[in-house]
Amino acid sequence: KIGAPVVPLLRRALRDNNPRMRRGAVAALQMAEGAAKDATPELAEALKDSDPSIRALAADDLARVGPPAKNAVPALTAALKDPVRYVRDSAAYALAKVDPSDKASIPILIEALKFNGSVQHWGAVEALGGMGSNARDAIPTLEHLLATDQDARFRVAITKVLGRIAGADAVPA
View (spheres, rainbow, N blue to C red):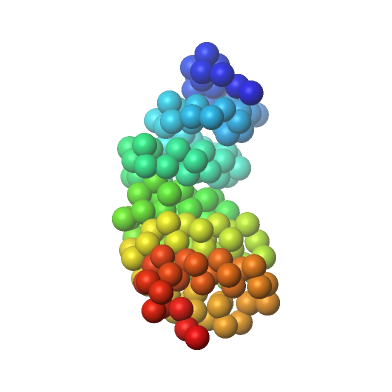
């Protein structure tokens, strides 16, 4: 486990010229409970890194921080336009976790629902559920998946999420 004394070193490593060092720092922050919270400014800056894996990992770290990373919302919103699909997906998931009232991530989360069986698929459902009624625009897509997806576990997850988004009446019989 990584302790609090290492966090300043990891924050500094996020600004290193060596991409391997930056990638290692982002990954290490995921291992330390609460460490990413202290590195929120550096993680927001890492969303602009030249390496897409670093950008995606930084978004993942910000998602773990949740609402305390609210200062990263502008950087996450900008990352929704990233040219790399998995970076956009990670940014959308993070934005939904950091600020569930921000609807900017919804179109990308809806698009991620189409990647059946992928991490994005499950993560998008989780993120939309956490947004509650703010994710109403996703209801038609979720209802379609509820009727057509082959994975019973996924359909159960969708049912729960629909309940969180629109209440018990939202789930078709």
